[in-house]
Structure formats: C-alpha cells, structure tokens
Image (tube, rainbow, N blue to C red; front, side, top):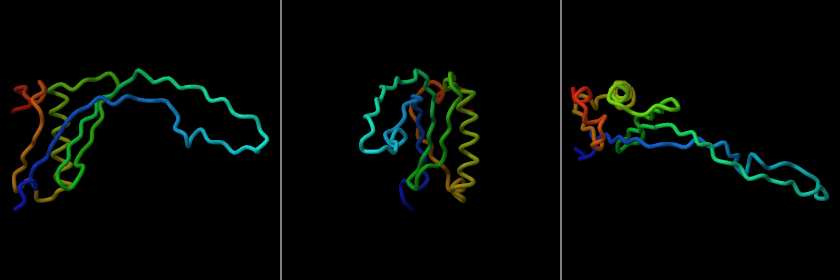
Length: 117
C-alpha cells in the first residue's frame, strides 16, 4: 500500500477577480500602415472570492468557490465536506472503504464542534 493513497488534503485561499484582458484578447488585425493602437492600463477589481480545493496523490478531487462576499464558516465548511464525500464516491471509488485521512490546517471552521461531529 502507498502511504499517500488514502490522504486527501484541503486548503482555502482568496482569489481576486480580475477584469483585465489578456494580451491575446487585445490583439487585433490591422494594416501595417495603420496607426498604433493606444492601450489603456486596466485596473484590478477589488472583488475576491474564497476558493476551497481538495486533492490527493492522483489529482484534484473537489474545488468549491463561495459566492462573492462570503467567508468560510463551520456551516459552510460542513456543506463543502458533504460535497467532498460525493466527489470521493464519484472520482475515487473504493477509497472510502480504505478509510480517508483528511489533512487540513487548524483554521477555526475546521476545528469547530459542528465540523468535528
């Protein structure tokens, strides 16, 4: 047995929503004698969303993004863990019989009584 085959790691991070266009999107066809197009510097959007990701040795198991303005709490994290359970059944059949070891940090929602139950 591989030491890591039943280990699933999870973490959350803030993801900034950008409205900047990439270089490919701003490319246009023009004649060589056309004037140079002015490019305006875009501004970053202040909006952020919380992303939760779970993965194992084989790759991504679940990614979950909260709606804009929401933070992770124990109720939300328990809901995400329910979706993780469904994802494990679908993507890693047989893993639950082996016993899953969930590795996550000691953030408050992870340690809450509701989550532990």
